[in-house]
Structure formats: C-alpha cells, structure tokens
Length: 198
Image 1: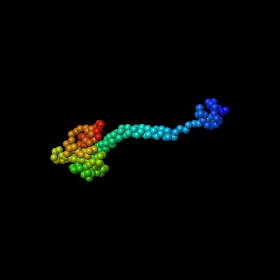
Image 2: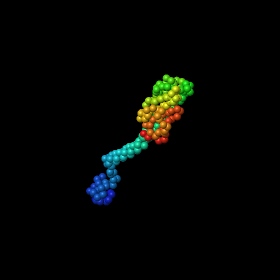
Image 3: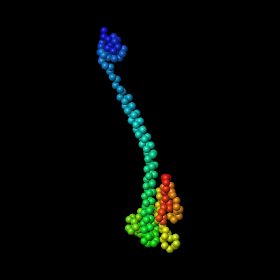
Image 4: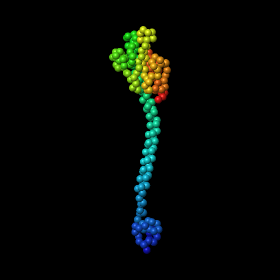
C-alpha cells in the first residue's frame, strides 16, 4: 500500500495529487506555491499611488499658501520701489533745470515735462508709475512772481490720489500699498516705510 511522502497516511496511489490528510503531493514533490491574487496586488498598488498623490497635493498646497502671498507682496514692493526711483529721477531733472533757469518748470503735467527736460536733463521722462497709473507734476509760486516750488507724485496701487493737489500732503510714512507717494523739493513727503499691507 502506498503512503504519503509528507505525513505517511495511506493513499490509493503516489502522484502529484494532494494527500487527503495534509494536502501536499503524495509523491513528495515540492508543495505548490500559491499565486498571489492579482486583484489584491492591484488594489494595494492603487491605494499606495492615491496616498502618495494626496500627500504631494497637500505639500504643494501648503507651499502655495506660504509662497503666493509673499510673491504678491514682493511684486507690489518692486512696483513701489520703481515708482520711487522714477519720482526721484524726475525730481533730479527738475532740480537741474531750476539751477540753470532760476525757476522750476512751469508746466501742467508730467507729459509736458518732456519738452522742457529732454534731452538736456533726462533721457526720457517717466509718465506712468509702477502700477501703470499716470504720474502727477505740479509747480507753484510761493511769492506770486516766479515758480519756486514743485511736487511730483504717484497715486500708487489704487490709482487715485487722496488729495486734490500735491502741495496738500503732509510729511508722513505710509504702510499701505494704496497710499500715495509724493516727492517735493528734494525729498519724499509721503513715502512707504516698514511692512506694507495689501
């Protein structure tokens, strides 16, 4: 009588057929390997991929939440600095004109300064601020005889001046990108300082 090679149980025939007692081949052949379920592997792979994607999306979201406000503030700050540089350049040209003519240019706006200042005192007169809004120039006489004062300004981010005339501004520092920037008589009257608010 034949016996199972694994457990010794009597069997009808020794072959690759499984033993009724232990389930192994009765002839002693190696046990058959059980193939892993393809569905199980696919499900695990899908779960892992979805988990990785969710983690990546969360990280990108956190980085965007940190970076975007800083980028917007830096953009506004650069427009502000460019505007201040343009105002200072116009003022330097106006001061140069005044030293030669003993009076500041008597024109109504920044565009009219081109005919007076270019090319002797400045190569080109900026007419728009960093935000694309028109700059303003005013000149006036304090004694009623000759033009002895001037101011040049920008309406900043919001594009609207808070005063009717540039000579109405008092010397102060600003902390908001919407507040005007004014340069008069060799220095900034209204200027940005410190942390700026959108």
